[in-house]
Image (spheres, rainbow, N blue to C red):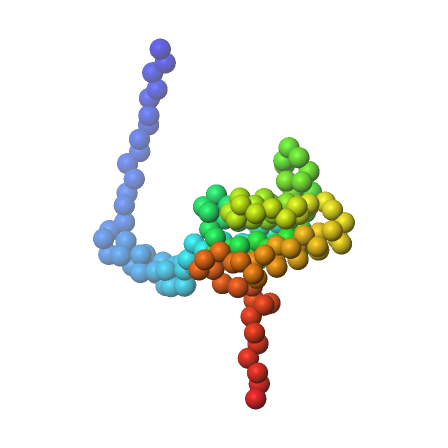
Length: 156
């Protein structure tokens, strides 16, 4: 049996006054002074961000947590051209943002409009339009319509 011996040194702590000053100094530039993003806002920011791995991870979170309010964002992500060549995955399609967006949409909505991540741009556009038309006609209850479909206010 091996007996481990821990060497503990006595650490001198700053006096109460120094400690209080240090905490006050840290308080000026902490994240508490910055507005915090809600969990959904953080996920939406990651989904719209420039880092492909974060976009894919955001889509996985949306599907796992069953966040129906992200359906319009996922439909728009079907147009995403992001592919991460350095991402370590078993299958090449798992590197593609639009693959995960379609997978999440099918899981969340139980609909399938046969979108294929590696189809030609014409076929992908047709499947995207089918998703978009479905959402315009039958959006899940309580969800916002796609931004593109909202009527624009007149400038009179």
